[in-house]
Image (cartoon, rainbow over all chains, first blue to last red; front, side):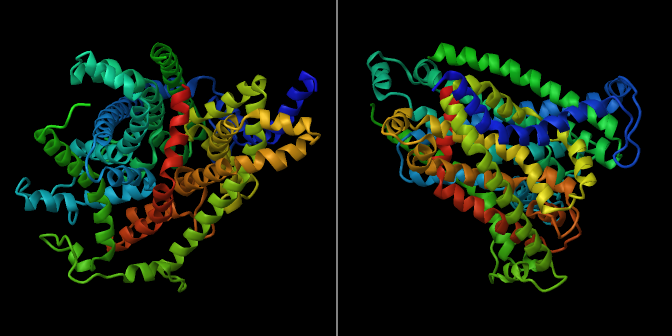
Length: 294
Length: 281
């Protein structure tokens, strides 16, 4: 069989997938680019060409800066917290103790819980009148009056961050645990012989094995955190007073609540651009880490 | 290895208990809310365990009496099953040939990277044109339209899993069959596909869970019982004026049950699937 035929055959087998991908991703993305230069409405008028007006108006408007800040803050805090908690939990789950197998199995539960159910559950926990958090804190004497955790701009974002971390740190823990189990026993044994203490054993023996998988988890979680929509929509819809409004929520409001398809598209592309830059920067870092660990 | 000192062992057990409590407390509370009488949930101080367990909400939600909460819930359950099911079948059908082609022909691999790269795209970047297109073809508020849209998420993911799966099947086995006179089609049907069945099953399961979990597109593109999925129905309950929080919790438990069971049973496959990308860098 000739090389050209093998390549042609490969393309033929990929054709159905590629056609579908162009239809449901490629074309819509191109159309989003087109829409972003128009003042099209979601329903009715197809809009006329306005150049970079949408972009200029959005970037100079006051919602954009604040929303970008909120999104970055959210992403930074949840990803950092999930990484730290995940690695700590993995180190614990690597130790010998009774019930370890059961605890490892439990870690899958928050991951498996649908995002919307998780958001609903925490919304109920934070409920200002009947919520479990208020009840627990009052009964323990920590809090004297019930508070509206999701209703006050000062606490809403933190409450969301806790809910998101609870769902996602176990996954980081499981990935880190799988990586820990790949560390060869004799390398660990050698570090004992060499007299390394617990910290330097973690830093110089274990961490290099963790670095690759953790970097991948870091990239994926950062991208997801930047795209976040579901949990925020269900818990606060971006409120109160826009204190939990992230980029995806802002795009939703612009394009679907206010029906401004054109400027919604511009905003969506700005988000896409930011995520692409992040992913490329991270990708370079991943390759570097993978190269140095190998 | 050094022996664990008693103090360290104590610390380990305390930490393990703490971790177990953090994981389990919110989940247990969801279940407790679902079986507590409404009065208990509104009581101050809050009652943490009901005097009498009340499973009536499960029966109410799963009943199909017309115009009841149950009718809306079972409709959304059916829609979720249909949309996630159809999208899964379509995604796997596309992914198996494409995954095999990329696995055996590295020169076309860049196209798969392009497909997987779409993971970075926030759904909001596709939502407006997809909305307009679905409206044009009369597919808004339609399970088929929504399943088609779900391919944007499911197809790249399953193709990536299938490609990794085929990478694990030595191509020498295929070559041996070809030398023995089997045609390529026979080789794939008799040798490769049976060996790949576990990966196909895992990919399908993950794809189904992704579809089951999806919320954003379902929120945008569905509006009533004809197509609304479970996630949208639950968000409606949570955001609406339902006075019985136990009912919301019950809907949550029912929606969480299938993925939680799958997660527990499939844990090993899940972790190896998730770490495959990490190990290969």
